[in-house]
Image 1 (spheres, rainbow, N blue to C red):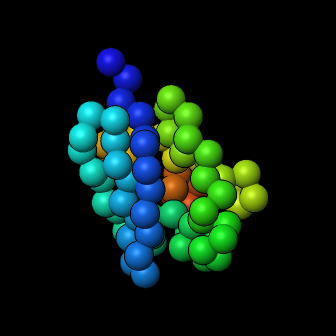
Image 2: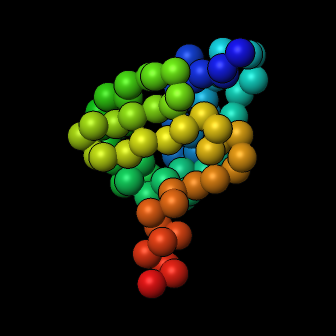
Length: 82
């Protein structure tokens, strides 16, 4: 069975994602700078898919598998490696 995101919440420092299997994943917003710098209105524009979360307005995609593996924004890591 594919675990998917069902709901999302933000506070000042973190994002919490409710999963279809009952788990809740909370991660620091610092892992995702585009979300950290987004307005509450932009964060609310999330689209749920069977594989993750998408924000068209801020060009952010987060996979459930990546969250479960503890992976943050890979674009930031690639930039740091250059």
